[in-house]
Length: 463
Image 1 (cartoon, rainbow, N blue to C red):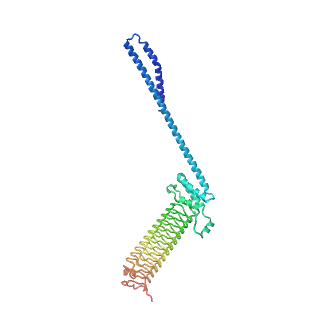
Image 2 (cartoon, rainbow, N blue to C red):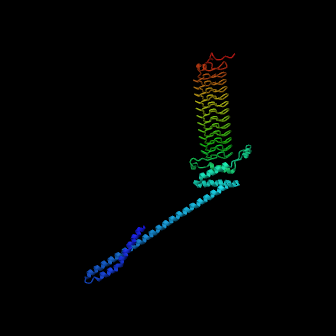
Image 3 (cartoon, rainbow, N blue to C red):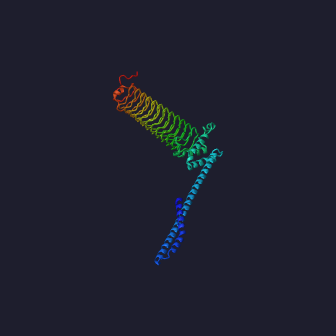
């Protein structure tokens, strides 16, 4: 009940008290004036006087009860408000106590990161992870502290020289920090902020299934690191060292690997769609079954690499070095291979439909039973290549060099053989070869043609 209502009740009580105080006077006056009245009239007057007095007393009792009840309600409300305020203060005290505890643990952990003992440093790292989980507002700060710890504790040049002769090993505390970073919750990352591990020494690190999405790993040393199933989507690995690393089934979609060293790396079944591998070193790397659709491999070195059954559809391999590479049954549909070096590579059963192999180098290359339909091989060097059973339907071989090439059983339906060099080439058993196609080519008596096709009269004769 409000204070206003309480004041009204108080006023009414004062009025009734005054009336009750005057009621005896009223009774006295009433009785004093009953002289000369009949008995009946006296009885009626007395009854009326007593009724009025009783009513006044009853009203007084009710008003007193209401007043007391109002006071009790008011007291209860004040008690409830006081209790609520007390609870709020208690909760604030608990929250402040927790904040102080977290702050103390936070400062203690940071201090312990510089401790001489590896065990103490490792414990501090896991303590920071627990704080990050329980205190979301400190999450990103802790991630930055741990990444700085990894960067600043990289091996010295002297240690690098020593470890070149031995298998890569990583410090226990650095591995602990990387483990915490690797299982971070990307949804808690601050906008426009990235995990910064630039030039960090992480040789031999265990980053199995690590979450390194959009991380800055430029120039980082990840040689022989275990990155199986790691998420490196949209990460920046420009100039990174990844030789001998394991990237089996890793996610490298839209990742930047310009000038990165992936020599001998295991990228089997990795997702490398749309990745930038410009001028990357993939010598001897294994990319069996990898998805490199739309990847940029301009001037990349893939010498001796294994790309069997890999998907390179629409990839850019201009001027790439694929010497001795294994591309058996690989999907190279629509791939750009202008000026690429495919000398002694294995393209058996590969799909090169509509691929651009202009000026490509394919001497001594194995290309039998491959699909080169509608492919462009202008000025390509196929000297001594094995094209047995290859589908060259509607392919463009203008000014290509096929001297000594084996085309037995190849499909030459509507193939452009304009100014193609066929000296010493074997065309026996080719399919769908028309006489007018041969008249546009350049051959000699060493060229072995099908029985139903005669050598053009103007071909150079050997004396």
